[in-house]
Length: 104
Image (cartoon, rainbow, N blue to C red; front, side, top):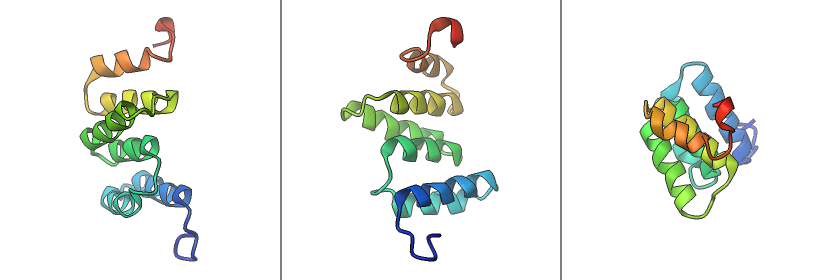
C-alpha cells in the first residue's frame, strides 16, 4: 500500500508489524525510523520493543508518559516493553495501574 502511494502512519505501522512478524526486524526498524515523526509514541514504542529493541521502546513510551500522554494504551504498552526488556517488577507495577491485582 505504501508503494502505491498510501501515506497513512497506520499503514506504515502495519508494514513494520508485518516485518516483525516475518522476522525482518531490521526492515521494521528502518520503517519505524522513516515514519518516527508521524507515529503515535504509544505505537512506536511497542513496535520498537517487538522489533528487538525493548530499551528504545521503554525510552519512547516513558517519554510519552512524562510528556502528558498518560493513557491506558501508553501505560500498558510500557508495561509490555518493560517485560520484553526483562524488567518484571517495573512491568507489573505499570500494568497494575489499569489491571486489577487478581488479574495480573
